[in-house]
Length: 278
Ligand SMILES: C[S@@+](CC[C@H](N)C(=O)[O-])C[C@H]1O[C@@H](n2cnc3c(N)ncnc32)[C@H](O)[C@@H]1O
Image (cartoon, protein in one colour):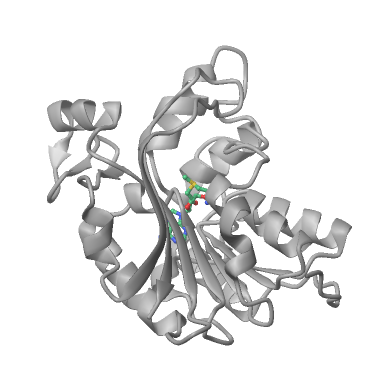
């Protein structure tokens, strides 16, 4: 069903709060700056390696800003397959929250199909892209520059929440906070909210590398030398995280080959699932 919606291009209250928070962290009156000049850091010449491994592994707003500045469509343009397979189950009258939306591939897909979207990310560069596409196509997407831990939605429950590629870069403490937030932002019932999720599993190649070279930080969770996190779920473990949800779809295995920009081909051992709050 395609719903007619008013075009929006606005910076939400939470975006402003997020900007204020960032500005506070960086020191009053300072603009957002990267350690090296914007648009140039690592984008030149032979810096390809930093476009993929090194940069991608350091999960700070700066590192994601940098990666997104260097690479348009870092995670591709196509929406996640489980979203295109299951989006029709979403209740169209309520908005969808895209947590860690990146450059917006999944938000765009749902907004083009008539949904109102709250697109949230720590990266201002990613959200600039999302806002500009939304304005150009007159999509109803509101961007929120903030950490999901401090996000305060204008209106809940959401029809659905997208969590693609986020769990593997969170500590267990953050994952536990995320699950509590999901309970606050979703509703049970016959039209219960859906949660779409993907995460890395312990079969992933990078699990061996992290176990060997990084510092253990919890069960199957590791911290790298720059403070970046990788957390891997054991087979079936996703079900223990979503015990108050019905499983509409779950798949675990080796995901498709893909590239980040012009980086090397990659494949990951993944779990993908669609849950419905019950
Ligand atoms: C691997 S990317 C996935 C992007 C997008 N979901 C996709 O599938 O194309 C993870 C995203 O989560 C964002 N992120 C990381 N930690 C976050 C947090 N605590 N709150 C909100 N966003 C976060 C990053 O800035 C990054 O854009």
